[in-house]
Length: 307
Figure 1 (cartoon, rainbow, N blue to C red):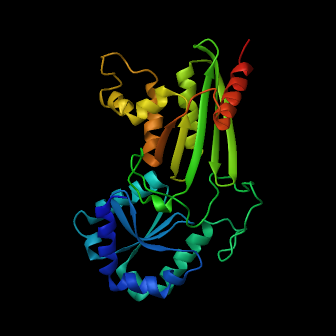
Figure 2: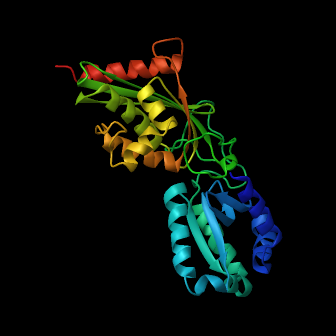
Figure 3: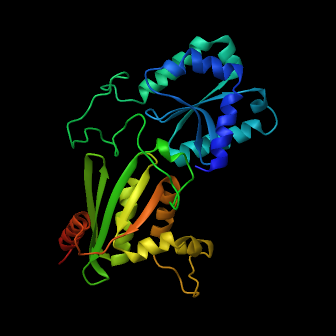
């Protein structure tokens, strides 16, 4: 998060409206599922944020209903929902003044509707060690670990409120072009998930890209991603900004030659806008067990398509 946004968020908290303070001190501050005030998402600062329910609550004053206010609010809501997977509830200050009980009831219903019914709001159930019981990855939770996002590829969001997932990927191809496969490992704390797939006729670079894309698409919420790959093609093109340059030039490289795999690069760049991706190159076929496991998955998939 940019320092100026952090400072501005603190300023807004100190200058909170009467209605914001009433909702906070009268309900949200002691609610069983934790809410936070003035959370930062990119260039937006939201009034209240519940990490566990991925819910934003906004209070709108009179200025939100005049001039460009409604249009600005729509753009803001769409950006929060699209880029960070959040649900936005909007209430007017007048609603808080005249029907605080109804506003609180609406928030309570929404939070409970977005948290699995088998999980207590006060004492979340703990899965067995190493077992991800939920369908989503990473497993849902309240506040989760994060860290500074310096040098990361993705939106400048408040990373301390995001889960950190480690991803290893690899691709393989027999013939290049030929039958190919990809493998990926996703890790979040004690939880681990393996993914793999392949195609009958493809290239090694397309499999490398597909492995990264599929792993990122498996994440059901914006995350900090520690991405490990032995593909210089993938790592350098992202870290050095080559892929963004290709896209800006209409998928033409600096040497005027066409950039290959624009369909996959388009998807990957979009995912890097959703997540905060930290890039790590690892030496292939060496002593990294996760990279070697991804290679095993990729090779096994490629063999499935051999005639």
